Image (cartoon, rainbow, N blue to C red; front, side, top):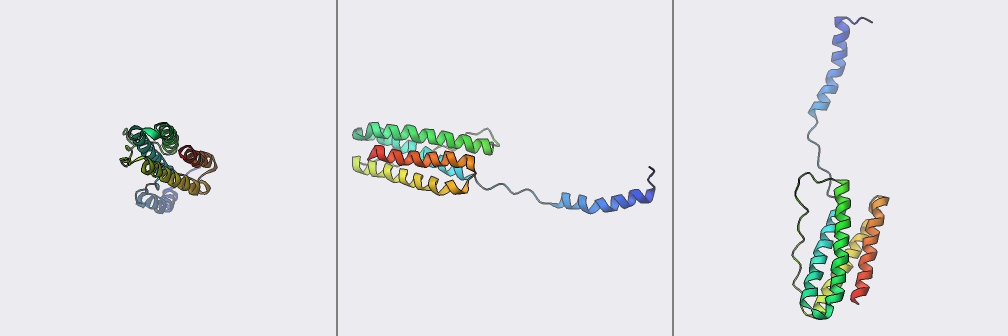
Amino acid sequence: MNFGRRDVLRAGALLLPLAAAVSCTGPEQPPPPDPLAALAAQARTDAAAASAVAKAVPALTAQAKAVAAARGEHATALQKEVDRARPPVSSTKAAPPAKAPAPGGGPAARKSLLDALTAAEQAAAKLVPSVERYRAGLVGSVAAGCASLREVLA
């Protein structure tokens, strides 16, 4: 099939608006933050706080160590899922946990951990219906884990 000069010009004229539209689109907006990232950060903070309580309050050492270990596992599992869904663009590690609150005496330290676990459980439970099914299992497990950890401290 032979194409004449006019055929080529017509085809170019038809493709010109498409090429202009493609080249004129602005930069792609970054995706919103992963909702599991906040849960992972909270789990790291809770683990640090529980470790501090374990060192400072001898009466709560065993329970606080259990909370620290479990919340550390929660943080690791959640961060793995965040990194799987949105691979990190740089070689930097995840942000360090926020500074854990200084534990007070036994009752104040216990209440502080209980409040943190309650908040984490509620945040995870609230998130379950809004995430994909395969992520809902992980988030639901974190919520259930926080509920059981509250029983450990009770």
